[in-house]
Length: 114
Image (cartoon, rainbow, N blue to C red; front, side, top):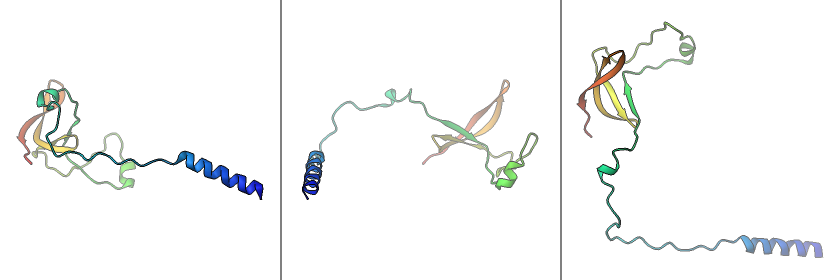
């Protein structure tokens, strides 16, 4: 029984050693924010991901594995329809696809407003 009592005492001591005291966080004041405003000038160098989406389609897994060089995939848009310009996944503009020298590019045709 003394082994059981000493084991329980050791467990109790260990439990007491790892107890974490809770502390109450100070309430946030409803006053004005302190510090300088971020401002647009401080954000102009923040990188964002820009994606141009010309269309989408859904394929079965069987159709997908059959794709190879020369395969054609029909998209959900007509050739004359504008592409979507997405910034960090959100549509911000519409554009037409153009070629610039030997590369693809886009010409913004309209801005999407919220």
